[in-house]
Length: 382
Image 1 (tube, rainbow, N blue to C red):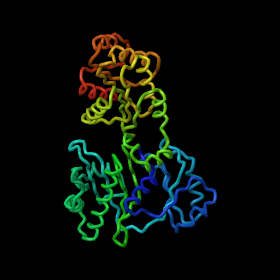
Image 2: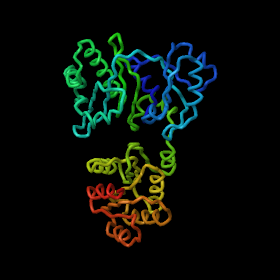
Image 3: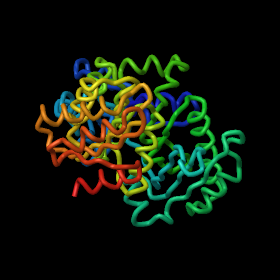
């Protein structure tokens, strides 16, 4: 579950991490009254669950109420990167000395939380990682131990922070964010930028928080926030049809259909190893019929980012011939134009492979193993 910036900052403040003074604006009615607690100038930020809003024109500046109204008229109701702007976060602009980057996420290799810090904040951290990887300090944290002083010391040293006061502030923020990450069952907590102010304190100028969907029920405050988070159309359509649809990465180009979360994660991992990125995944569940498979394929291919589709099935109660029949049904009844790589194992595998081999379609590609399927699904885009 992705949180809006203003929701993430609510959590930050709960845990004692300062944020700029601000108010959430959902209507321009009584705007002066809504803004009376703020000083000018301010930053007017569109609240959308996507990155790159600044480059897309979703962040504006204002020196008075009239300019906020003009910005609000432009932004509220507009569409930024397929997301409708229903709310704005209006915050006081702060005097900044330096902008840092700080995040905590899961490290696949070590299977532990990974803390990343860089003095190159306020920009695309992926670009920094490509061009100047040495500018990003990384430490993994044993969950049984938590963040200790030596973790913070290592981040500061590798990140190039030498001032004792700033190092102390950074350590405090790292420990605060880790507590939030751990206690709220987050999968990502990111601050970009983490601003160093003239008085030597650090303040979170942005907030990106993702909560594990399976753990939302454990947190009453997160459940309350869930009502404000819109359900994506494809997620809703899949849910209404009895499937689980997951948006994985908006920069990805591969769709995945499988049966079971473990199988889906294996597909994502293998595609990543081959240098690709999955954009979405759909879990068929058990015992899927050909009609259900075809319906699942139609849902995934409604995602315009999908340039090729990988279907990987290990059949138990799910029969491989039904999977193959569903693939054939989807291809013959629709004009997708997207190659579908299929890998089958288990019940009625031979029948399934025969159905696919007899299909008169260049869009259907068969793979004998998951590594081969991951390779083919990426090559099919070329």
